[in-house]
Length: 125
Image (cartoon, rainbow, N blue to C red; front, side, top):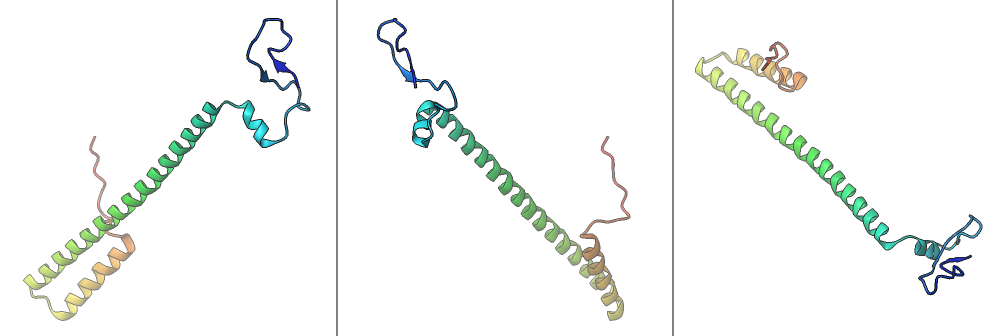
């Protein structure tokens, strides 16, 4: 293996290893690492750490959004259930009708997850 700066006749200069062919390229990992500047490892490490941090942020952000949506739906269910019970108590419904209305509400909620299928979407534009 030849060193750059040797035999060039330019006096003393820094010499560093230069691989001229694949056969001359060192096979030991520790020797290979000497050919690469340490700043490359720092930059690569920084990029990897930043990528991992972004991945964690995406995952935790999605989990937070899912939990928030779950609490929102639960709150909506409890609010509508309370409204139904208040309506039934206000109008003094018979026990059989009361049971049918509550069963209907729970069945429709479990099928549609609180989304009114007959409601027309509103355009804001």
